[in-house]
Image (cartoon, rainbow, N blue to C red; front, side, top):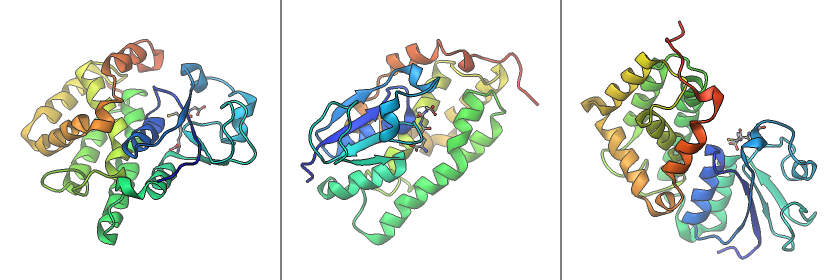
Length: 244
Ligand SMILES: N[C@@H](CCC(=O)N[C@@H](CS)C(=O)NCC(=O)O)C(=O)O
């Protein structure tokens, strides 16, 4: 169990950052939070933040060094960023949390599931829900990921970073559809809702339910907050017809 200081740079709207929060909480980590608002997404970041992540993106962690105010990072702390390596890091410094299986085959399967998600699904959430691009590719991607799931349980049976990596986007997608939020067309909204309610996606739906019920996810997931946030974002509004 790590006892070094951890400062977590995050924003409640960010699915990348939410991965890291789920992992820290799953591990029972003690950490200081520095929360950014939606303005972080729009313009230049505070100058001091580039010392932590030169790319100016969240999430990021400082690890070790003295306890300092989050906007005055110590030269002695490690500066770590990119959500997927951060999940691996948290799994490594909290081995007792079993965020990665000990069996090498299952470890590889967990990483493969993340890779499948990154390769087939990740960018489509933005394409369909923010840019209003056609929905068929996202349904195909969900089918691919559903096929990679075991018959029951989490992505590799036990709960792991594989589930943490996908949960923020999958849960947002289901919430956006249920709440009719997003830039997709009326027809595509109906198509996605009908498909995801059908027998074909019963396993995927069960997986999403299991994610919602997992304690470290349940404690952090606030549907009302997400709806309130996204319903006012201009890029997120419904397009009249599907683009060709
Ligand atoms: N590949 C990065 C992506 C991080 C990312 O795109 N973060 C977004 C929030 S979800 C961000 O910082 N946006 C602000 C910006 O790009 O200016 C990761 O996995 O951490």
